[in-house]
Length: 154
Image (cartoon, rainbow, N blue to C red; front, side, top):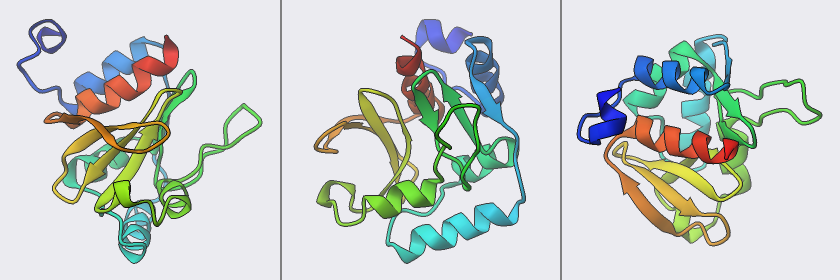
């Protein structure tokens, strides 16, 4: 993983999934491909950012990930071994409609400390857990996903 040492190369989907799986993450199998289109339509209806290419590609491989208290939301709700299901990306964002700090963004993941979102251009952001203000901007979406999940396991 030269990426993790040098920090100059972008991670691809397969490298990300391999790394996060080796850390003990639960990767949920993909469901119907129509769920991705439905999630996109629902996000558009609430005026959130639609799924960028990297997220649509990610959802063709898995419909969500959980690691400890952290998760990446999928296009549909996911039943888990725990008492609580993993809500869909649409449900999470529908619950947050109206927050001015989320204008033009869609939340895709969370851990105990931060929320993670993307905008209409596919840029990813780490957001404050309480105010949802931007703390960090990422140029690599898989690095944002990695940061989201790793904190949940610390």
